[in-house]
Image (cartoon, rainbow, N blue to C red):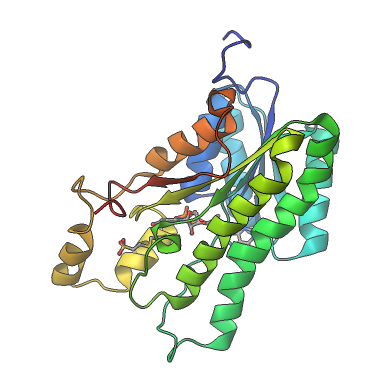
Length: 259
Ligand code: NAI
Ligand code: 1HS
């Protein structure tokens, strides 16, 4: 592969929070195939180890760092270890996220706080840990995870909608701060990806055929997303093909928020 082409990630280190499974792991595969060295940062040591094994078996360079993104010391150590072992982080994917269910009058405060902590505070803390070295090199791309739930209201998902809305506007704020300093910051806003753990949790929360059909009917392209659909968009935002893109909230939702 020619390292001058703009969609190469050769010699770049890409750190992916929540990268052990689901959309994060699909993003890891996509970036590794384009030449990146991958740091998977995740809560789950078992899944992290098996994700790294799967990547290494395909000849890719990948390491696992166990951290909870809500813990400042753990995430700072994971990024520090990544930089020592793999090199400076060129791309950060703030993919770690959890869903939460309940309307405002029903939701538990503890669930609200955890959803805000993982989705919003986790994005803040991982970004805070990588930005100093990106500022030194005047180069970096950060991709945050919004959702259609960050753009429109989804019934019974109060905390999750609030959290993803915050991530989308934090993305714009970060783009404003760092655009003159070589760091681009964007968000992807996926629609439902049914095949991941979160997708199962979401669809399991309304498993009757009628409710599933109602949910699917919101998607003009007639299907839910696949992890690879989202990974392709994240990949684009990480590469130099997206050199003129910052502060964007890219809908990857089969048209769900367009109608
Ligand atoms: P998933 O539940 O399948 O995987 C999430 C990964 O994040 C897991 O490996 C988990 O161990 C890790 N994780 C969770 N909490 C963590 C923490 N505190 N620290 C470190 N790692 C943690 O989720 P999925 O579906 O792959 O979603 C990925 C992202 O995409 C999330 O931000 C989610 O909100 C977003 N999203 C997902 C959609 C879907 O329908 N699946 C749709 C729209 C957005
Ligand atoms: C969980 C993920 O962010 C999607 S919320 C969207 C739910 S819907 O569009 O399928 O009703």
